[in-house]
Amino acid sequence: TSPTVAARQAATLDRLSNGRALFNLVTGSDPQELAGDGVFLDHSERYEASAEFTQVWRRLLLGETVNFNGKHIHVRGAKLLFPP
Image (cartoon, rainbow, N blue to C red; front, top):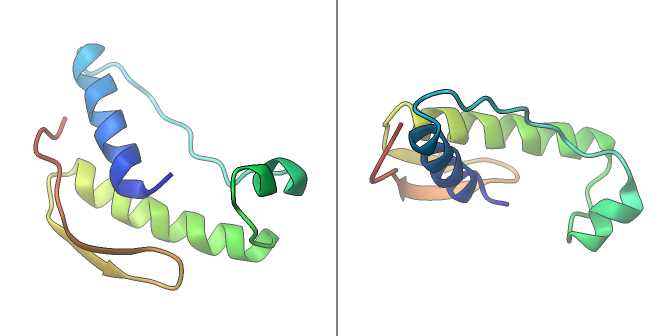
């Protein structure tokens, strides 16, 4: 999942729960399960990608317009139309 899609989903859940939504982001653990989801990164690369994902996700949820060009994540002009 891209951080922009996840941020939109999180913002929607936050609105539906009247601000009570809590989130736990994980990198995944089982390589076979991850491969089934199209993720073919080794352990350290998953942590790099997760760090980039979290940077973009948090900034979007804070209402920022995000431009980000990382090793794993690339977004241009990303913005939530309905931030939490």
